[in-house]
Amino acid sequence: MRCYLIREQDGHFERGVTDYDPSPTSPDDVEIEVEFSGVNFKDALAARPASNVRRVARLVGGVDAAGVVTASPDPSLTPGTRVAVHGGELGVRRDGGFAPLLYAPLSLVNVLPASISTRDAMVLGTAGVTAMASILALEHHGLRPGSEVLVTGATGGVGSTAVCLLHARGFQPVASTGSTHHAAWLRELGASEVIGRDDVADRPDRVLASERWAGAIDCVGGDTLHQILRSLRYGAAVAASGLVASAELHTNVYPFITRSVALLGIDTVEMSSELRRDVWRELGSLAPRLDVDQLIDSTVHLEGLDGALDAIANGATRGRILVVPT
Image (cartoon, rainbow, N blue to C red; front, side, top):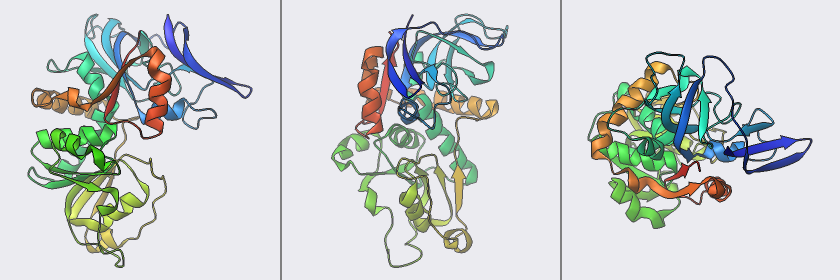
């Protein structure tokens, strides 16, 4: 079958559409007919030469996918069940979703709510799971509807989805972006305000900035995360999932000690099965209030993945890229 294959051996790297037949790696794998996938920043990292993300010399790319079960070792997961798959070693150590057929461990298979189609599941995709997990973490920390919540990297997949979900859940998302020409689109998604990436915090001459944010979802990292910590309100938290600016964090303990703020790490790779169920349940409850088509940057087939991966690596996308694996 036609798949998007990444190969690197003896210094030779290639990626592209080729004939390749994925195969199960365990008797416990679930066989899934893939209907849609999505392009994530992690996919772009895995598709680079000498990638620090990709763990094997050859694999089908794609860290998420949605489709229908065709065979399963679990009798409760019957053929025809609509599912989404993401996380774990998918697309980095084992074959991923850029193919018409996928074999995935049972722990990564999530039954979709009735309100979410396989297409919409991949418009949301890993980005939507990350955004929803961030919101749940902030709510668990005490964030309440009506609060002003900062979202950084707001034109990216996680950021734009977070703006959309926060608005649907009754919060006031403030979108921070370096692409302010997309301000009108961000407001259509539900942003109550759009600010530049340098407007997260004030008083650069002081250790702490003015208290503003009741909560924050950070998709950027680096100095942006430092500025968020400086400007959170007393007792507030930031849910951090991004490192596109930098994996380094240079800050101090003042926000944690004098304002009792919290830094909440969000991981979707090793996410527990219980949290996966909670996330998809909450996405399902919000689905009737979402217009997920607003989140789509473009739709591509396998031949369009080269350009899509380059675009997301260069920050040249707005929202999500949907993949039809044909």
